[in-house]
Length: 264
Image (tube, rainbow, N blue to C red; front, side, top):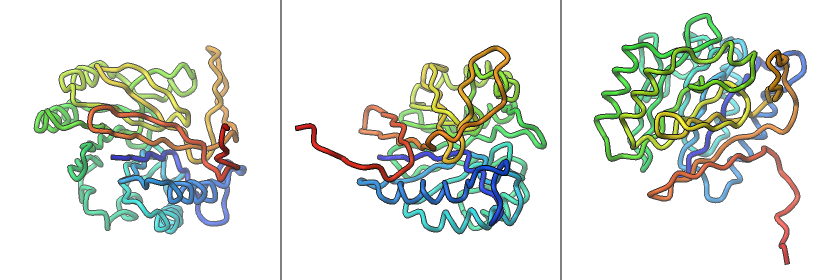
């Protein structure tokens, strides 16, 4: 199975730039075109939050126009920039999404890799958390299929990043979450967004991973008082390839580059 991941799209209404500088919609179109060129094609694409920069209905309309060009099946979860009522309205036609409630959580059992979507967004806040009730749901959900390789997808990565301004708005109190993950060795990966950078750490006996943005990247400023800034270095996405026993992750820069050229 080949699973693609894109994240932190930050699409704006037509004619607007994010932060008055970033044409996030055009950058997403480039990412969609790149995904459509892949051979083999992804079996599915997961989109791990911050779909619309300010959560306006018109931004989601713009986003849906772009996603209509994506050939692979896709699955969405919200990020802290998304506004839940507008998000729900924009994706009301997606049958895998829960029709009501304050949480966007679901399970996809259609592939060799089981996809478990976990809600980490707190209303009106930038930081994230997972409640005790959510942890009980996650524990039950994972226990239901202990032999099926699984990825857990969420917006906030459950670890400190070393980027001071992002750690101030990261996921709080991850100890109980890590204990739940550690009870389920079939979890091959925790796939997140939020930090606009590829990152990986060991977590709960598996790997927790963050994906680069299809738009701007967060400056990799590792000073204790690091700046809250972004760069326009190349956008990216990730491919997660399951070969039946091992999950491989590849980070890809978005673009149509010269090559490939033979080495000999």
